[in-house]
Length: 353
Ligand SMILES: [Zn+2]
Ligand SMILES: [Zn+2]
Image 1 (cartoon, rainbow, N blue to C red):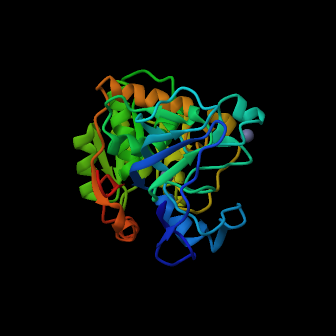
Image 2 (cartoon, rainbow, N blue to C red):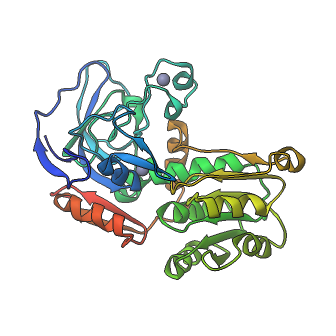
């Protein structure tokens, strides 16, 4: 197998070759056709998450070992099946659920592998979709596409389920209840389209970038607000005709988190998702007095990926704008994401597809 790997942090990816793995036990080998490029790939390349205020969370401390072929938004075709693997056939085109856990602990057994303390994430703790092949430990982590566009389905493995899982955390809400989305990048757009597919009618999107706001409106947002030189709290409350029940923050900076919480109605929920960095100071009595909820959300579960693919199969979920890039241009794609020179998502494609 070949792949574009992080060999050294802070440096461009390098093309590496390694023996193609043979699936054993319940493992399944896929030939990668598509892989989305995600912001987390930039953090992997940098080697750390910026926590703000000069603080860093080192990925080496979290057990990331180099060289690593990144890519956790993988779609591929099954080409070899381990003797104990069931439920997939040679030739099936599947999206890989990447947020794999130990499979053994209570969180994993209840279906929340993304919360496992021993993560084995594809593309972070084991080689991912920036390579020609991906070995999946268990067939249950594959979701068949059955006609869903593979380039779009790839993005569901991370940005899609991250948005979907965040939306599930603010539920149940009436279909006409205003919902605010902060940040209209790939995740924010995914959230707007999923909310639309679920028939939500009152979606407020805030972003500093006018083009992204326009894109969000064309994706189905009801109203957009600028978030730079404006009082974001007042803008959200104004757009919602009063304090709001739910804000999902795909930026999650000190400014956006404060504005979001201050815009909440009694009983409202704030779901911070973004990794921009910063600190939050809040008067603690306000949490019980207003019955507020602050609920983080990290990616999503395998079950949520299955639900999202099922929603896509109904035709109700409009596809995200994706741009296909040859896998050989992986470095260029990462640099474009870094510069913010992307609308929607970039998806690497294998040479012959
Ligand atoms: Zn586990
Ligand atoms: Zn991701």
